Image (tube, rainbow, N blue to C red; front, side, top):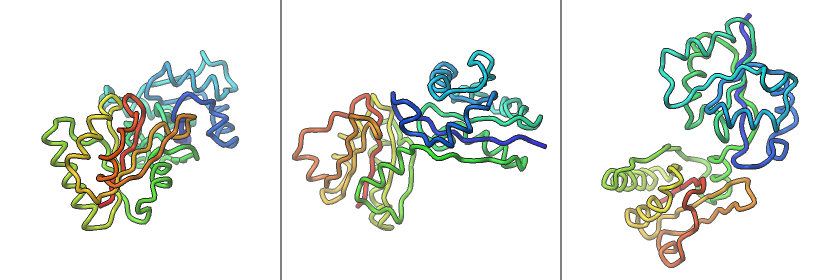
Length: 235
């Protein structure tokens, strides 16, 4: 009988796992000895803080990130086929959402291996909850193009789609480009469009602010450079 693939959320910043993960999730983590992780170094730090029954150095950690070749996925799934449970971790938040772990989940589903998502922080849902924008219809767009002209085009298209469907658009950016994204939104979007900037969610420095584009232009830009941020638009 195949093992179970557990999708284990990770805190969104430098906080103890006990502060953002339920006790039953920590209970699932402790007996596991096989993990697929985005970065081994940070995963070991998380597992040390969460607590494991086996010594940390005895755990089997395999990396799955943007550098992993597609033909490596079959090998990563081997312990599951042999009957061992595996924990899948991302760097922060929920695995397999805007995360390369989705490829492993897809293969597990294809082979009818049991996949169990565990409760934990999701920056996307937390941002949507606190935004005051439409939580009935929304779409996550991942990363927008980095090239300025392509990014402006994408923003205008998303604003048009939002207006047509009354749909909240969510997207993220590499933290060091957050300010460039913020400035681009102010240039691309109409004055009445509402934008939420959600930064450092679940941390002591958390900030979630919603303004119209016109309103944002009257304020000092938020301090978001190099801080994890989710952007939301509703036209």
